[in-house]
Image (cartoon, rainbow, N blue to C red; front, side, top):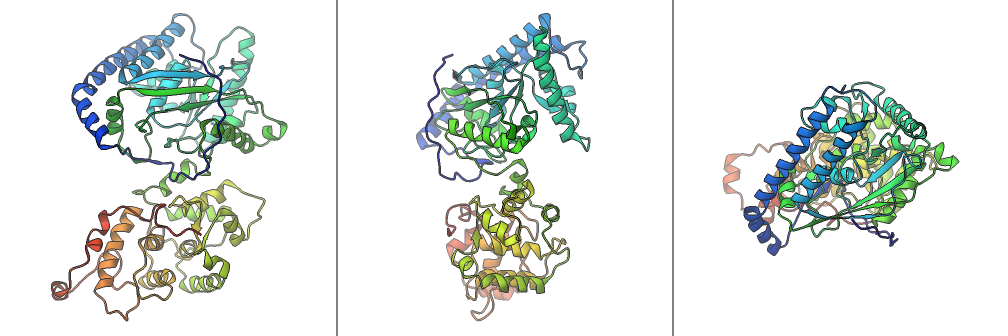
Length: 519
């Protein structure tokens, strides 16, 4: 273990894209190494790591035997020593996997200085290594997890803060329990009773570490000092991050086993003492701490959150009821029943705005606030979530045409053919050519509550159908998007489609942050 001073380098300014996807792409030479190590190295590492983890699990069973699973009291005597051994064994298991170098920077604060440790970024199950390296502090977890067959015994050793997720007031209850535990850690320390510090990953979900997403305010509502802890994985390939989209869990573990050596850095930043303004505003407190950690990590911050992950996903389906709920919370009018006439009126008003037309109707959140006629000073979380629902290309801009279509489509999830054709004509803008794949996804994704992947397949049918029709027809749909009912005789006589159209469903999705026209 080495201790170095912090080097404050400028934060990366570029926008890195979707924080919830991670596909490991290796060079050919490294792919050959993975193939060789899959035979010579990975099986041995897996076997020895399994044996070490099994030993840690058995020791955890012995340690928590006869203990109340829901008791919240610090470990004492031999149990406390056994906990340290279990944490050390988990570190050894990671060392066997390939984590051969752990660098520690900065000084860890005492529990009286900072009862709460704020760790970021949260990227995968491998975060167990830095957590155990710093002594396995208390974590916040669901109450049901402590009775789980394997993970439950290990969680009991950390003296976790248990939250009942089945309760309607679970969020308030969690914040209250964190506050009580943090107060107990400080007060009992003065009496000689040693509680472990509280470790919280405020992002609330795993990301690919290219940015820091929004922090949950729970850890910052305590009005207490916190110590930020930055976790870095300086490796050639990101075989660490396990996200919503990307390599599967077993594939990710195997790729890690096939690396010669993996590195991790743990950096303790100075204790952050909140100001009076931050004590009264947990979101302000969380945002300022996040900015400091982003500077240390040299990554940008973004306004995405755990709730946005399904709407940035390639294969998950969005939900219109969430859009309705957020709109109601913001007092923004939408229609519960499909209203084509209202859409025509709104589109006529929008298309006459030359400033928006010049930038392709793509606007940042500030212009979106103006369009909704909301107070520019207020930025409730619901507004950011509503904006992010349409930012599935991760450009920090949304297309107002897509918003118009969704606001007037109703709740059925099955828009009429007339409505769909008019929506397509909005993007066609009088052209006698099929609309782009980007625009087509905007037309069908939320109105039909389908994923981007499903929308791409429907776009292929739309292209096939378009190529069979006379040139002077409109660019709308004939028989729907889900399936095209064609005459077999016409199909037999049609010309072969161009290769690019035949391969449309399997080509890379150009609409994701690549060939999208910027404003």
